[in-house]
Amino acid sequence: MMKTNVSRIISKYLSGRFSSETEERVQRWLIRKEKSEEKNQASLAYWDSLKPYSDGQTLAALERVNKRIGYSRQQTIGKRLRRIAAVLIPLFLMAGGYLYYQSTKNNLIEIAVAYEEEKHLFLPDSSEIWINAGSTVRYPEEFKGGKRIVELDGEAYFSVRRNESEPFIVNTNNLSVKVLGTQFNIKAYADEERITTTLTSGKVEVRANNTSQILMPDEQLTFNRNTLAMEITNVNADGVNSWISGQFVFNDASLKEILLSLERRFNMSITNNTAIPASKLYTVRFLRNETLEEILNILQEVVGFNYVKQENNIILNKK
Image (cartoon, rainbow, N blue to C red; front, side, top):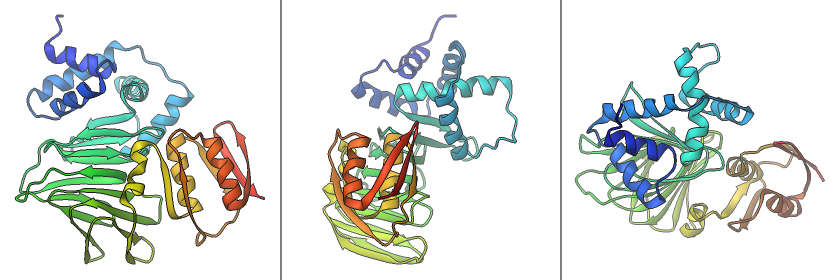
């Protein structure tokens, strides 16, 4: 069968053969409604053309994705879906480290970024978003109803295209951020106690627990999931956003928060046997190309622990 133009674009995109600049344009084309069925069929045809395989890394990645999409081991999936699943994880890791699919229930596009990866993309209104490792964003194919609503689980930096008639809203489990046009960072991982919103430029309204606060540039709002308390502090927003350029900057962060960030960045499991209290906070900065071992060597001096590496697991012990 002769390939259509859509099939050629899909095949080239999924095989990772576009430049980074062209990839962004293709992403915007992919999320448009026109020819959506042809795009879906072309994607399935590409998957079918690949030889299915799996290994330990594939299965571990698939397990993480299963948790994100609510798949249970007790469920059964057909032979075709198993074949697609075996190909899906290595395919998207190769094409940029994220998982893209459309929810048939509410017609949302979901981008799930793998550990060790980050992703930069354009939303339907041409707003930009940088997504950190281990994070998921959901948004509609097309913004409607006078609002632009995005759902976030994890961390992302937004550069929002100004549109006063259509407010831009980011929803997390416990907190909502409303803007017209601005740049800001939200960190809202489900496994962390604190949610932070940091404003780079413009103005945002942050709402949580039936209370709203207005943030100005270089202000950070911290929401504690356990106590429901909100606090606004002055920070260097560029430092908070430095993860986009590959740096690691922690300001008054607990050891648990630091270790969770390292797990996501380096795709490693870290076991903490140090018994260091969560109330003890650290401020530390790591450069772009520092390895996990280099970071741990610094942390063991600052925090006070010894560590050993066992395959894909780091074990921290009392010093």
